[in-house]
Image (cartoon, rainbow, N blue to C red; front, side, top):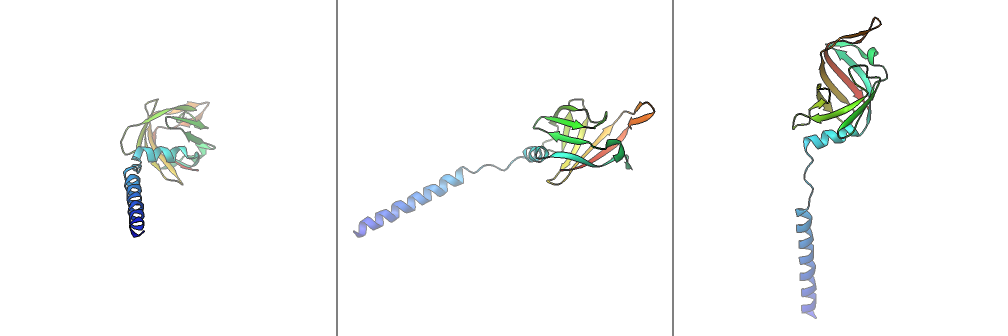
Length: 145
């Protein structure tokens, strides 16, 4: 009887050891910087909080701007000419901090769970019926979820 108990304990110990080894071998790798950025971008529909152009407040020109990302596309409302209604985007850096839209505009991306800051250099000034729709310069868009 004593040998049966020892054998059961040995088998239980071996099974536990095997389970630990299998679990350790099958852990998921940490997400890449790009995967982390994508997860945060697609988690929300981003609503404009503030816009500056060359450090001058231009938030009033983008009232109601929203931005929604998928893994490869974006859609906007009230983006004026600076933000087309829709398009595609790709990463241009491994660290997930620079993207490029399909219109060639490169954008520095800083995203957390609670904010999205996008910085781009807009090279055009467009006028429409005497009202400025876009002004050339460094645009900084700050969004909240």
